[in-house]
Image (cartoon, rainbow, N blue to C red; front, side, top):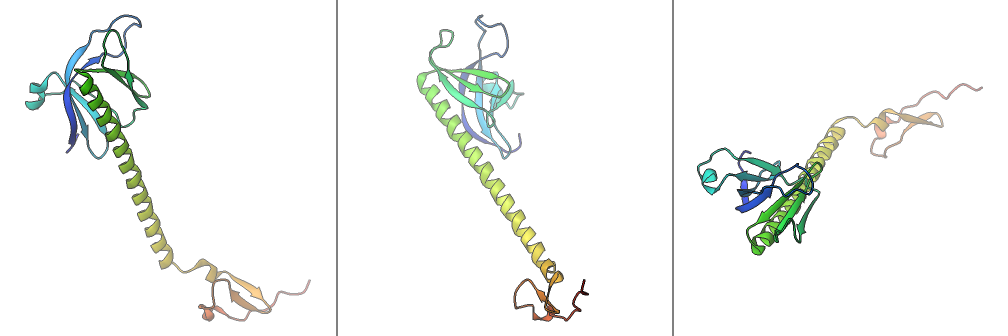
Length: 178
């Protein structure tokens, strides 16, 4: 990620993906950082806080801007403070260190995702409005097509636009009788 903004950071345990259902999976404790840049919102995780401070390689990241749902899970494999991030191809399970941290992470994730999506929509609208204004400018620079297409009315051409184009009235011959 290029220049980014840190929205939240702290320790959480993460359940590994995959494995057999019904078996308790070994949890791994990581230092998580919720970061945002212009193109994505992601949870980046490091072995511990020191590896993050030392700018060592991260253990992985999970994009959350495209998540389908973020849910608090009551009791999961004997753990009390659990939430999941449902993505199109996986469900990630996170276990913060306290109930307070659980609520902090949920609130921050929901707020960040909504803000990120809103900025994305606003950027699209601005882009489309700037595109439509530039296309309007191009149309104004081109000659008006309806001035070129004249309708025959009683032996003369009549511009279908407005009276402001009086120079386009030129006589033409009426069509031959049938």
